[in-house]
Structure formats: structure tokens, C-alpha cells
Length: 168
Image (cartoon, rainbow, N blue to C red):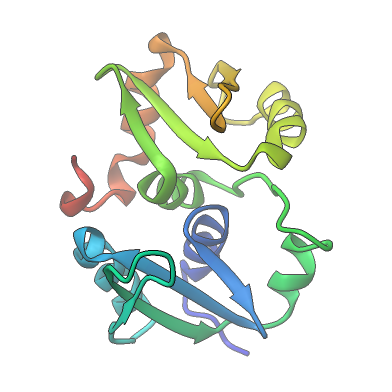
């Protein structure tokens, strides 16, 4: 299976974010609000989006799937989806575009599954990215927050990988 140059970072970022691996396929679903972002990722793989509806509330969504190989499933699901640190800034940027937000207009924050908190803390303490990371776990979910002093460096690092439609 040949994967286009740069796709490894996109695949990894989507798995950490809003994608999943099903039968060797990367499956990505986004709300209509993020249609431009989803189309950009689909275009990266030479694909078109197709319309779908949320199983939860029937809202309009868009999706695509592409064959990436079973090794991704074996790496990330043992047996549940697990955290594997981003391999570089490109994967980190894709993950942020999927699951990130700007808290109080200052701090990059990632929404996380609760089951990832221990792995995140270990990764953050050894991260090659040199960001200070604080984890915050409110009652309704887990979040990873970068420190205020690191926000500017973080956004400079990911800027080349973040498309204009994700500047909100």
C-alpha cells in the first residue's frame, strides 16, 4: 500500500482527532460547519466528501474513507483507542484542528478521552516539542492545556499546517 507523501502525519493527526480506523480504512466524519476542513483532508487523499447524518441527532455531516492499511489499527487500538504521541508538528496541527480550541483567547486546549490522561502526562513530560503542559480534568471530560507562555511558540510551529478555514 502506497501512502502519499505527508499522509502519515495527516493519518496520525486524524486518528488522534476525529478519525478512526475501521477495517484498514481511515474514516473521517465532520459536521457541516467543518466541511471545508474535511474537504481539504479528503482532497489530500484525492477523495470527495459524501453527505451523511449523525446517528445521535440526525444533523447533517460529511464523511470520507480511504484505505490506509491495518497497521494503523494494530498500533492505535489495543483493544480500545489509545494515545500514541504525534510524530511531528504536522500531526500535532491536524490533531489541534480536530480537537483543539483556544481557551480564554490565550491557551491552546485539546479535548481528550479520559483513558489517555496517563499516557498524555508521560508524553508531555518527555515531549520533543518543549511545551509546558498542564492537564486539567473537570467532571465532564479531560483536557490538555498548554501554558500561556507556550501558546505563541505553539501557534508559530503549527501555522504552516493550519489552513485558513480553521482560523476560528
